[in-house]
Image 1 (tube, rainbow, N blue to C red):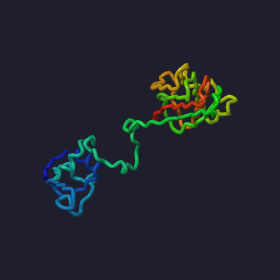
Image 2: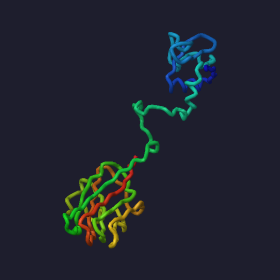
Image 3: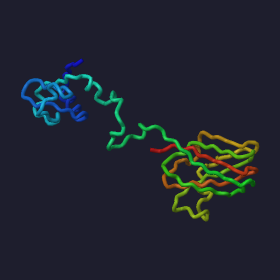
Length: 224
């Protein structure tokens, strides 16, 4: 059902920019806009609203309220937009879903008890923050694995990097107690947990009493 809605000049200018509406150029009197092929708004000789010369002295009316009521000035009522039409601009990180990932290191002793000071090195592919970790072993074992961070340029196969001085775990490295074979830690608030794309992470066995394999997974969240 068509309705007539009087809009102020400011509202018309806003809709003109956002919706790129077109309307006929006329002399005096009210200007009628009717979206679609028919009606006054579909007449030939139309031009973009932003080019009107006498809009301040004319009454402007829209004959199809359903189209224009979708926008409530701030666009909050536009709920069915296709994101594939976003050709430019930046969507704020707060508007995106939380992206999670993981970084996993595996130690395999080939059936023998793993020695200490065994190191695995992995690259970081994105800016992220470590939020927790899970570690498992094949048997009950007192096992401690240190986590270290350094840059590609610093890496020299252990001559100076990675080294214990690169550790990010403060005094709380991933640890499994002597009668256990798993641990899950949901928060690492004391760690230096921020990772940057291009960083490297090293995992090193510090203590291991019985395990022949160890898997340590760091839980990470993408940083916008």
